[in-house]
Length: 276
Image (cartoon, rainbow, N blue to C red; front, side, top):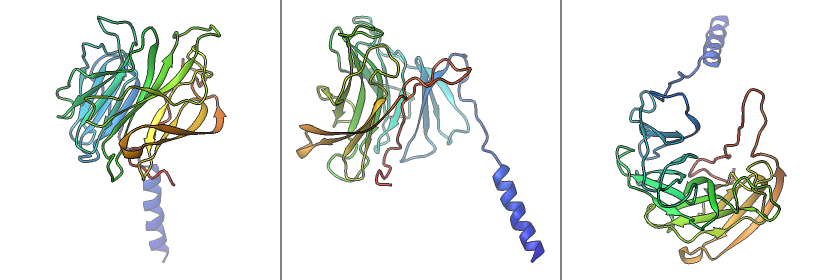
């Protein structure tokens, strides 16, 4: 009995102190930050990542080895990367814009790859509303069984004037949806039940994250106010919304010693059971 107990304790001890191997995924440069990562649910060996301002990383062996490249688009690539796979093996890279024939962060851009990031389309622009600025996007996908499966969702912050402290300038959360794997996107709608300032700090309404329940309902979280948002989608059309504010936190500009700023949004795993 003593020998059995010793073996069990030894196995538990080894398991507690064993660690996963850290793998460096960037192959050059020292300015990689605001990272995003995604795993293909249809092929978990395929892993993709992104970082400011235009870095893309891909792995085909479960993250053991990586390649690195820069994203390009005629709409510009200006950070806030969000990587996402749908259930059809498509990979999406959401980011901010800086086009030659426009102005800085004048829209949200979503690019698509059908070969795990080896090649990309030029991307679709979403939310251009001169002279407002579009910032801090995040993507979601409907993985529930039903008519809306593989629909894409994106939420982000619209600024009247980015960085302004003027009381007449405000921020809000916008929402859009694609039913054709990112080719076309619906005209954005405002989904926040309150406005924030434009300073890009705690009292700015930003950091919005869309996620989908097991019955296809859409929920959204954003900074300042934790908003539980259910979009009503009869016949596949976004025709209304029910808002429930369930608390307030100062979550967009976390102050941690030795770090300049930590303000990445809270995220949710696509396809997770939100009832838990």
